Length: 349
Image (cartoon, rainbow, N blue to C red; front, side, top):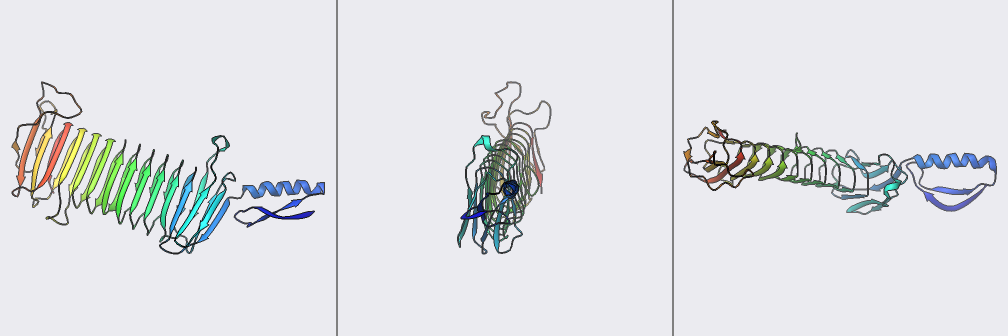
């Protein structure tokens, strides 16, 4: 048996596999089994890393499973020998990439298992697959062209984008930007669900949006689904084509920007306001239900001349729009509430 110096295969247990020229037929079968066995071992990459560095992953396909319990290194394993992992170990950035695959080559599920320290910033992209990330002390950017995204508690900023799938995240210490072309969004608990964040800007083409607490401005839009904000400390702008909206305003600063704009095409709108808040409330139901209460308020309201209907439902001569206005504590922050089909409730917080 003659050894050849060139090395070709790197795996979890073998840094380099030398090629052998087999001249004995008894060894040919054994070496063939060894060759197959080694190629079943997940492809492996490892880079040393320090706190504050950024891990950049660009996966052409596969699910990204990120374990943030690592210590001083980043380790990557892929369960398919079709993927050729390539790593660039820098001081500030660690980049993990791989070869592109032809669709005909793919059989079964491809999983990337990534182990990283919690204090590393994450910039992860997969072109086809889901992303699951544990708790992170850094900034997080997660993007997939098709799949769900789940994240734990994030101390820094978060940008999470999926072209198709739900988003679920724990508390977010910094600003949160969430985008989904089809799926629910939840931060804390829900569809897009966010537990706790400084600022939230979230959009989904179809799905519910739930935020347990937002300490700054909230902006949310869904084409079809409910929106619920259990505790909003600042301004709120929310809209849905088909669905209900529930917002509880719990300001930390009564003198701050507390404007509210809630719009539903078909669905109910409910707002909880502090009694001490200075607000100018304007509520409109374009198509009130026949002989049913359409604007219900714990505060005294005055009827107003409705504007021309602009909702999703065409004008109906049998049901005139209903509009009410009032000033709380002399007026102030504008609170605009609108639904085309549904009712509006204004409650004391």
